[in-house]
Length: 496
Image (tube, rainbow, N blue to C red; front, side):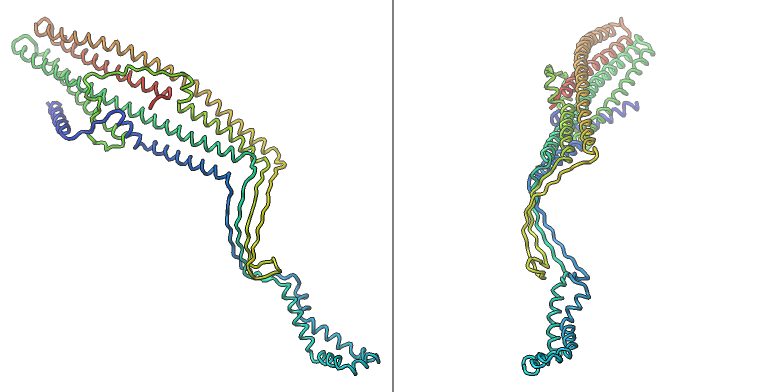
């Protein structure tokens, strides 16, 4: 009674939900929603965007690089081209010179000729007077101080600005190889995104057809429980007429309780399966959904076949395409590593602005200058470093090729296994269809025999159980065939 009450409540709840608006979804709509909301798919799309940015950044290496530099420097000391003693000597040039001349005047006066010139020349007398008064010394000291100052450079505040342009002329093939690598990386990101999308679609297909399977089995279980209820009612009547025993009635009730438990589990399983599909589609777990194939009375199996060639598998299978791109990237990595040990040539140009400026003497004002040139770097010897790195890159490229060959063999085996699975599903479906027809006829004959009184209720119970099992096996066989086609399409790279 408790089970029946619980079933009644579930049924009422289901009827209430059905009265509300339901979201009807086809398989393609479920796929679209899952691809739009799946986190791994979002990550794959961001990886693709990042690869596109890398590709654009790599192309920029072909173009000139322009940079600006600015600096301000404060120095606590200036620069002098002469020593302190030399600077003092220049500053006291007049004093030292006139002192020496004055010291030698008594010797000059002893010469009559010179004495006569000094006595009779107003110019010489004026000059001698200026020597004695220090006027000449002062003038010469000023001239010497000016000279000393010219040898001192004022670098207390230094301003420097530069605009530089660099254009690579030859980089050992690194730029070209790096551009190829980023192009392959972008294609690899696209391929991986396609692979993630296929995984999502397979997961959605599995959840979708699981719901369809459970929904169809639920209908069978409901019909099976209804048959048991009818049989239970018939046995109760026959017992009242003395045509059935209490043991017969107990057997039917046990089967009825078991059927109602199966019905409860089926309904719970259907609700949980729909929650899983909602989660995959990025919907609220309690969204009331109805699948387009869920209400089909007779589940239809696609009659199409998967046609492919080995070349198409190599081209379309995500794993093979990814490994092939990885192999190409490793081949380009060899060129990149080798380029580090080849000459590089670049064209340089710069505009420089400095203060102080030394273009016209040393002056505390801004001066500018344009410069152009070519820079070359030629590696000479690195004690085998370059050769070893190149050999390592070649070994990694060979590993990638071996992985590609191994994956190709495994995928060929996988495709063969899925082909065999389809054949097994066809055979199983054919047998299940035959069993279902036999079970239908067996149940019909058992019901007639029970009504006419020459078959016991246990025979009807066995026929009903065989009928339920035959229908369930047919549903499983159909779902297995549908999913086998999905798996084969994925294995051949045709799942879209």
